[in-house]
Image 1: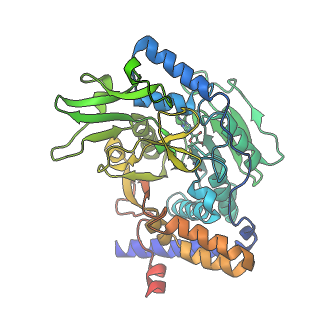
Image 2: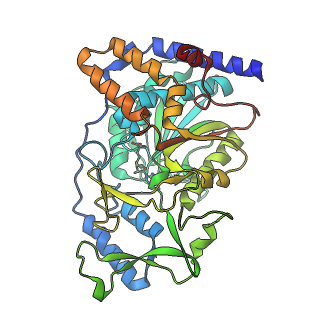
Image 3: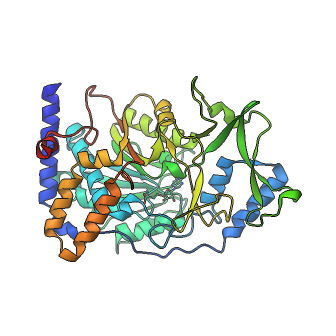
Length: 446
Ligand SMILES: C[S@@+](CC[C@H](N)C(=O)[O-])C[C@H]1O[C@@H](n2cnc3c(N)ncnc32)[C@H](O)[C@@H]1O
């Protein structure tokens, strides 16, 4: 075991050395941001009208149905037709804050590939890639490794036509990806295959899919950053009658004084079909619990593929391990917003319950969740910052240091965001990079 750890840390160090030494040309992209502007769509009230008609016709709907409709309905869902990220959008994510975030994930992947699957083809499968910034930073890292560059292919799972277009523009440059619409469908009636394909400006091929199930099988690095928190949650509340589901209903006539929204939360009279997902352990004193079966299904599919085909996965999100209960909320222009007001014009989100996700998977080893600060520091983000500062112009120092602070400071994103890894269990004592402090960092800190 000791011998194995030494070997692992040495490899880890050598990946760092090769990566950091070869990256001088990559300091040009100091801070992400920019691109398409975000504006509230004129389709916002289409979502509102649909929801009102739906509830009028069939009665109150679950929070999960409300969330799914608002975020991803084909006509007018929040994500479907515009750029929602960055300073002009509603929220900013870690890959958009600094290139160092994606670089640390890239180094992690290279390290795991070298350790576990050297020389073998690797699919990089990103779930919910947003603007495509993380995939771009990963590509830049992989291209520094001659033995890896020709082995990787990119597979983006993106439901939004607008965001997938933006990803194509960013990642394929002037090469024209081929739109397959629905013609890429398989004949087995299950796997639909890619809806777009092309070649990235860095060389590796790239394909887009609507669902993870459509991605081909193969050794894969799965990565989901702020993907699971966008999936629909069911909300439950403890009452004197037992656990009831929180539903979204239309306001009654007497209760229409507040004109901001026609919707209100109500409680189901008793159990609902989704109650089967609710598992409350003895001693759990929470009054509210949120369950996200779609997140459970996604990690199950990732775990099954890692177990059967090989690979590893990282899920990164704000979350908890079964302590929090009432986290469903909305963000508009970087401010908290009432989730029932202006549906379709604000992001809806809920903290990820990593304890629930761990219960959902079998056949893989899970690591974490650990904090973003722990992971990034273990991966050597401090060393990377120093190197970038040495090579950057003085006017860029501030943005580099600010980005580092934002990502790692416990009072900013360092503590709230968590990393969880899924690994093929073929090496029983194996601990992936980032989930332990490597010896070279222990030495430099003493
Ligand atoms: C909160 S954003 C995160 C974007 C990016 N990963 C980042 O961190 O900047 C969520 C992303 O997941 C996508 N998404 C949401 N629901 C999805 C679904 N059911 N299937 C595929 N993609 C989905 C959205 O379109 C968007 O790209």
